[in-house]
Amino acid sequence: MKKAKRIFALLGAVLLAGMYLITLILALFANPASKNMLMASIACTVIIPCLFYGMMLVARVLGTRHTDIENPEETE
Image 1: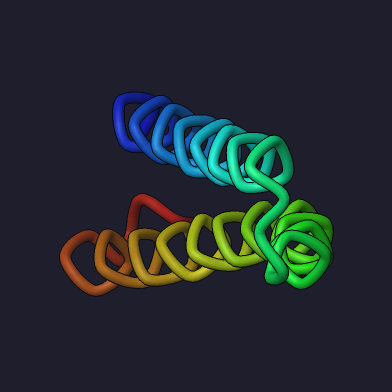
Image 2 (image 1 turned 180 degrees about the horizontal axis):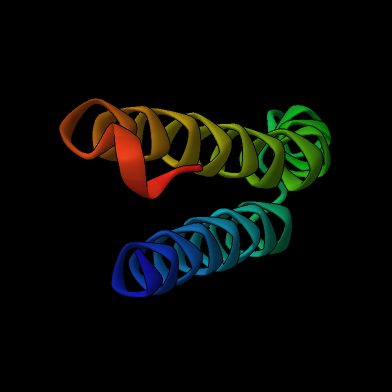
């Protein structure tokens, strides 16, 4: 589980950094879509970590349920 958390954290950090880098590059070239890209980047700053947190919660619940089914006497 720790390895999966690290992979998801790294993936999220790379996605956010890449998104901001693309937004910065578009802003420097005065692209008309720069403002929309900035708004999308700001929105994804909140959305991406929330999605990863939700995925970790689901993985934790499903992982616990899986071990409970295999070894019911260990949970008590």
